[in-house]
Length: 276
Length: 130
Image (cartoon, rainbow over all chains, first blue to last red; front, side, top):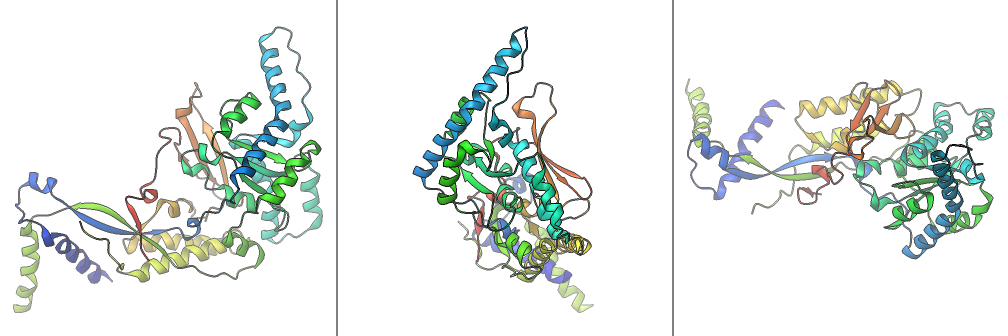
């Protein structure tokens, strides 16, 4: 393995030099002259396909409208709290019913989903005890079934990457999956206005809030489940897996051209060895 | 202009690493094969170093630096956004990926540059090959 690689390294510079001018040995020159090089990289085979379920733009529009309508009560509550904080007689207004069924923001939503994933974790660990699962459901923490994300308004991408897998893992089972809903551009602003919270990008909603049954039906019919093939394999089929091909890319970069002198030395050495 | 190469030398090494990685993630969350999964993921790292191959950050970030657990969100990883600054300015937001096994965390300063793109995600640099 070792000698092959070194041979490869020697070959590479010759490729680039095909059209190049004769190279002088000065240090300044070395810095200036760089040749085009392609470096192969291995990519993660699991992050290749887009796992986000597609939503028709018109449906997405109706979803965001419904959502704003549902959240308006909570927004009013938030507003009241803000106002009462400034006044001297601080009386905390009564929280609307929706507050129990709602998570706002990245951390609280992810936290809720991670807690829900406990069931999946137990299942994978082999503890298929029914009472344990019941305990989770009976918790006063609600089951977040709908996750709304303003996908186009979140950057950088690292923030979005875990969601397809996370929602799948947080689902109860294959049939009753957590729905991942991507909202159209501009919805972050609308949500922020409705909720009176700045910069809302992620909202989680449980499936037990009766006033929101309209939006549940809409999403259930229009939005497909998240499908992550490799996670599915892991959760359902035990340890049978289809291995996918390695995903290779080449990076187009540059490398410095080294003076010719070094090359000549290398070329000269092997025959000398053969003579001796 | 130099054209990108059609084939890649030492493809077998890439295949080996890809296989190790996939099998590692397959065992990642079973209680019984935790150690095997970690060993496989460790081999991914070792083989790539020995054969001097480049892996994309997307791949390397899914393996814990300390205990080599294959990190899967919701199963063995905790994800949070943290802001330790007094001003709570958006610029000092940090995304934290914490391994549930050894509690080691990876920190991504996401607030610093919102438009940051990895070199492997940039279409002008990374070119697909079959």
